[in-house]
Structure formats: structure tokens, C-alpha cells
Image (cartoon, rainbow, N blue to C red; front, top):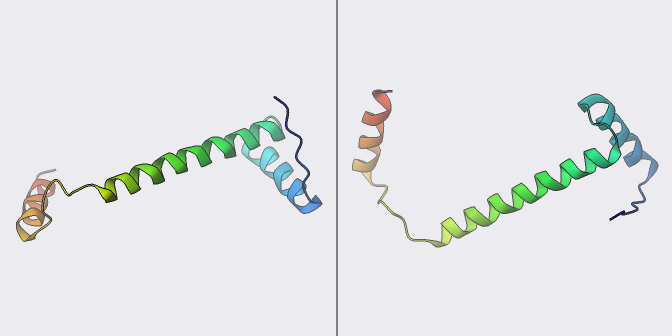
Length: 75
């Protein structure tokens, strides 16, 4: 599926610099990479929001942090 995108000259120059300096083969490859990264950010955001809605598995009290410090000091 082809999509035509009109960009202001400044944005075209920016995209062309990114393509040249970051090793992309062309503008389309650069834009596909941006879209994939945006999809990954959206998945991460959704997972974080879902986690925020759920009940905590452990209570983060003083003893929790003491156990965590002990465990980390063994590493």
C-alpha cells in the first residue's frame, strides 16, 4: 500500500539528513522505523497503564526494601 505524504521543506531536509546519517536506505525505511518505534511505545504505555490498574503483588514497605538491598549486595 502506497501512502503519499507532503512535508514542508524543512521536514524533508531533516528526514533526508536522518536517512543519510543513520544508515537508512531511503525515506520509506526511515518512516517505517519511526512507525514501528511508535507502536512499541504505545504497547509499553498500555502495559504500564494496565500494571498501574492492578493491585500490587507485594507491599513495598521497609522490610521489602531491606530484602531487596540484601539481594542486590550479593550480586
